[in-house]
View 1 (spheres, rainbow, N blue to C red):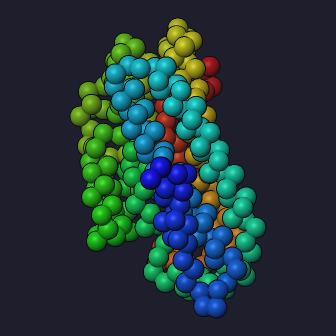
View 2 (view 1 turned 90 degrees about the vertical axis):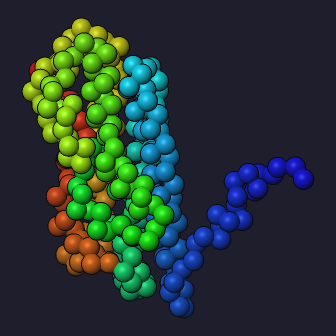
View 3 (view 1 turned 45 degrees about the vertical axis):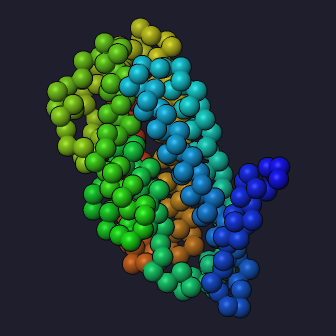
Length: 260
């Protein structure tokens, strides 16, 4: 039998995955499920794209990295835009089915934890929110101990004759990215001497700004919906989410903005 659109996309399976728990059904629970399932699909794609960027950086494929960062920047803008849809759900609508979430929480998103770890925002303590029985737990743990995007970026910078401090090469893989004055000096020189590299650096900054905007918008949506209540699943809610606000993926790029 010929391959059809529905078979290729596994639509019968995909469209059967939205299973509201409220009884009788609360209208906005479907919206809540679809939005979060869509986010998980975008997370899957971004992890796929960032794996390519890591390869591009390590192999000094600057133009490959540029093309992929353009895509990633556009995906991130889409993630921000989807929050506009979620904001059409009122606090009362969410409250009507919130109890049905029981112990489930966005804190348990293994793919988002992978996303953070890949970008170099490594908080080993967040592993406790991952489901030990889930097949994705091993993926998160592997990502925690793997090279981050920034580690691969340092390899790219070495190809551009930027000297990478030895402590960065030897740092604990589970440690988060921290700004470094030597890296900043190298980036500044690249901005001044290699306009083609500067295009890549600006795209990286664009993406970084987008992920910070998404975090801010996400916090405000949560605050607007549940106020200062604790999150589902025992998560700490808005106050905890605020701690990650305005934390850049590429701190060294932001540190030199005043010099450009």
